[in-house]
Length: 118
Image 1: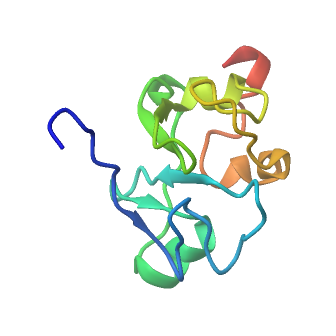
Image 2: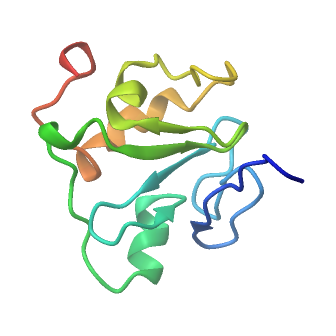
């Protein structure tokens, strides 16, 4: 249909339509992350490790305006800064994200960055 935006491809192992993968399958596991190292969205770090053939590079603070987060519910691309500040809820559609993902931020984003200073 004209004017309809196509969602970016999300790579991973057994990825569903809302970006859940074999590693993370709960109702709120609907965030995909564009990897700085290769520019592709992956469902999670474990999918990247299984398929990419190279190490993850973390996004640095000065790159946090990059659109690198995909909401699996509505398809909106968020900047890293938006994601870190969103309180585990998509600012576009309101769908909840897994708050436990915060434990994995260090694999994707500069460890020195905290949501309140993003």
